[in-house]
Length: 470
Image (cartoon, rainbow, N blue to C red; front, side, top):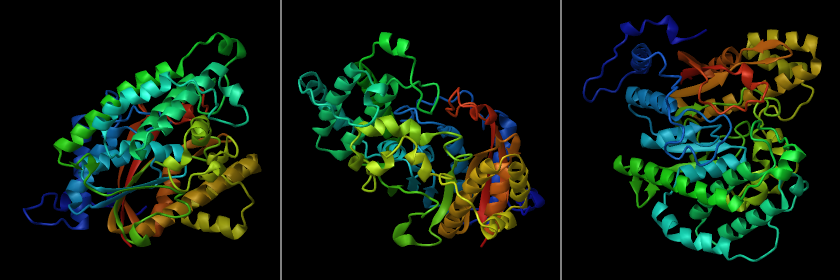
């Protein structure tokens, strides 16, 4: 494996004089040294068991498998300080925007994309503009609109509406939706929509112990009394305080101007296996890529799409992204079908061989699974075919000597362990990169559903740091 592990970091300069721009090898060595130093000082630092996940707008919405903010921030800080000329950062699977928020705190231009409209909504809300003063002023008007609303129109219409919501909950959610739509400012509406999304998560008949849609028992539904309006108001207060604290944090670091981030924020509803958005579609645009992709196809790992299905039925999709439409809600699993490995098909020998040439380990794993269960083997192939396309797209969008940080975990299919860390490393190295550092961490704060059988297998993950060399 082509890695800086074959180089003695002590043999490279790990200090920089004033005005000296480190060479790529020097920057690699500095990154390795700083990671090792932090690890020696606190062996739990990458696990962050004491981290408060609610800080800095990370509590707006309990998105699945949220990354630990402080871990991402530390790594970004190390790379930015070592490299010295980092400007544009990408998260190709941005989820709820954890990495982007960390990038903003470092003053970077932040680009992100995700195929899930709810992820895009949450990320756009977390990255501003931060109009907490205006929201505070309009709170009374919002709540008054809700309380004085006597309209009996139902604001959602989809199959299973009354399976997933009681009539009383439907009526209250409809009042909230109408009040949100009465707000003229889109940025403020997005803030409201995120609060509504969390309200829906907490007041629907869906169990919160799994990301897959799974209705509560009828006996529990019949006796459960919950008011979306009360939940919305309570979560509103907490979220507004989080927004204020995060805005003040950025403001104190001179990152805001009139409530808006001073750098560029470019977030898109888009699949990274199809395209990476840059300025004018430039190749060699990004200095830094930080992400955590799914560990397998979403239908059998974390069902982000199913999890998002109910909230998105109530939200005005055009407030999220111009690409958002009802196609994303055609079925409960449609969004997951758009994701990595979402389309299962027969792959040609030539298509598989391209993957096997890039990763010999994948070839061994694929044939082992195929001998046990050919259908599952096709699912595995579909996932890695898509992730390989994504890695190729990202590589083209990266500058030479730009860094990539991938947080990945392994999984098991048909009793066979799939070493995502090894296979994805093979893929990335095959494009023209070196692996300079691997950080092992235990998953202590990622929000994984307790009843997701795959979650039990995802207890450890690797943070892989690469540098593009060609």
